[in-house]
Image (cartoon, rainbow, N blue to C red; front, side, top):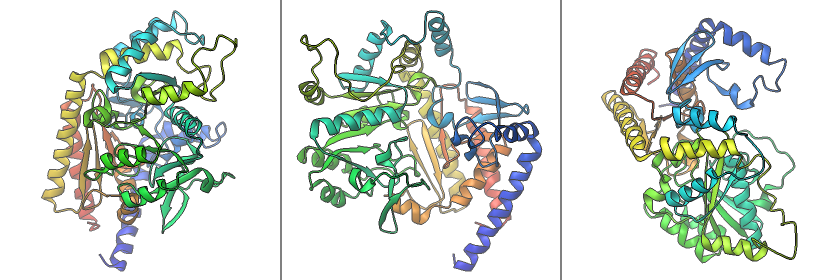
Length: 463
């Protein structure tokens, strides 16, 4: 496509987006009014500034969420493939979580004391993921921060290596990317006085030569990575990447932290168990307590013993234990632990994963069939119960590939069109997640709406 043709196509896409946002405003008057009122109370309009990022121009205000469906205050219903950007992967208000929550609410929510449910949860985490020692936090951000602190503590090193295009929550060390050959802050994040050069290193995913060079200096405490990158458009690992990553981190004495917050969609033990990975520390968040804020991180025997060598588990000579600088009074609270047990015991089961992954495969296959039938230079990537449509010919190998080939305006148009047609997808990219309550009719509905989106673009002559 020539530059002139691209400029014309982009202008047309902007006009189509204006039309979709006007349609959205007309059909969502109560949500629009609520959003206006929210501007008077909240810094960026909603309780979380993330909530402003929906493509309709404002978010819908939810009246009720049940299973794989959401109904807003304007009375409109949606098939939900966003599922709280993974936090709702169990579905909205699954019965086991509701029952566990109600039982625990009547018995106490947060006491900074353990309950017997925690014994079951710890045993189950070890069984699923293979790491023997666990800590609970209130978010994956906190879990990643805990993992980083431990890595620095036991190695004496300062830097954290991440891959360009990554996302690991509000971890400051991960707010970096490579753009135009230079290292800077990612995702329009503004500088806040942190010297990222002192605390971070960043290389492209799948670039083993760059990884080896970055680790050779001996100043990296840990590599923090997803097993497959999911937040910049899905970037699969190249053949042999994880084997080489593990060998390089071991050779250089670098702690390997694998963040399974999104790739928990791969199966009961996440991508790690499915593919036999060997992290030193594993992090999982968002979905693990059925929507109640929670995350976990687990340590190998070796890493735990290195921690205990610095901070003994029991020291009879002192009455107060050392503060590790992680966690908090709400971490591991009784309500969270009760819901986590319900999720692990009754919701994220092998049978439910089989259902979820089967429907994700059907959604991905349907989308591929539409792409192929219309000879479009797009592709679909699937990771367990998660799939993504990307407006690029083939899966990217790195964040640089995404930057070079991504059509962000087309993604935004799809999101707005889908919302008007009663489908929610993750608003930051075109990623779909299946929950146990998702039905075949929901997947069929997506195929029909996706086909009409393609027809809209063809009629407008932008593809």
